[in-house]
Image (cartoon, rainbow, N blue to C red):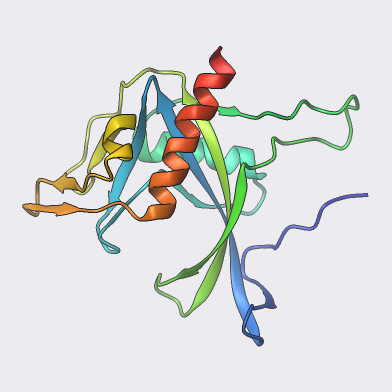
Length: 182
């Protein structure tokens, strides 16, 4: 018995009918204290947590921790409210908090991301890798999220609002990590 997960590049029947190419992706809301880490996706001009595609040979947990490390320099631990079942094989990975189906505007033609959303705890505090000229990383407080503040993108001189799904998931991640730490 096993679960079916779309393979990167597979196709599935979309909500409006017709076949749509899908990519399996992971996203991790990394929390430290009352803050979560977001990065500005320059091409999309929006704030989002670290994440990316599950590569061949990776399970979702491996992909998530790799993406967080590559994009932020942080080591992270996945928060899960489910305990592992008492067997060693087959391997078990923590389930995501939710799964989003997102239309993607990446190069290579229209497709959708089957995005496994995880909540994580920073194992390195707020010690991010040195920034590169191309990225903007920011720790966003619970208070800022509750106020729905737009976040400044200094290099462009503009404030970029958070999408509602990112804002609400970030708040839920802070709550989940707080409860797991209690």
